[in-house]
Amino acid sequence: MKNDYLNMVGLAYRARKCSLGEETIVKDIQKKRAKLVLIAKDIGPQTHKKLTNKCKSYDVPYVIVDDRDTLSNAIGKSQRVAIAILDEGFAAKIKSLLG
Image 1 (cartoon, helix red, strand yellow):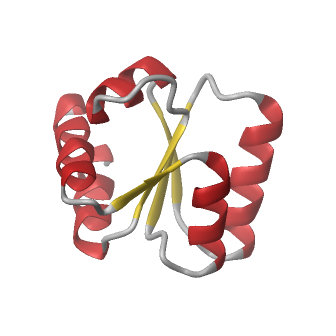
Image 2 (cartoon, helix red, strand yellow; image 1 turned 120 degrees about the horizontal axis):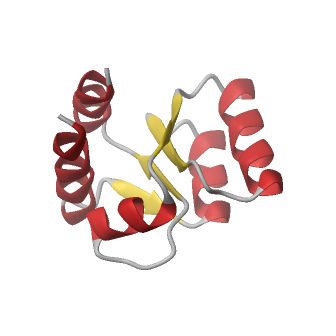
């Protein structure tokens, strides 16, 4: 079940329905484009606080998921600590897979 959500993240990335990078994710949250933010559990405390606070203030759901390596491997990039899902369908499916 756990790998299913990673497959979905990979699909969303290939469909260009993701944003990567702290600043881009924050902008997408503020512009209400982000439907779900996936945050690695081994993210730094400042980045964690910044992203979770932005999500809370703009009412965007977020989930703390696996470590950065697992998250990075799902999209084939290295050292990604957060991914914003920009598509409602992908976001709903990933949320259901994460339970």
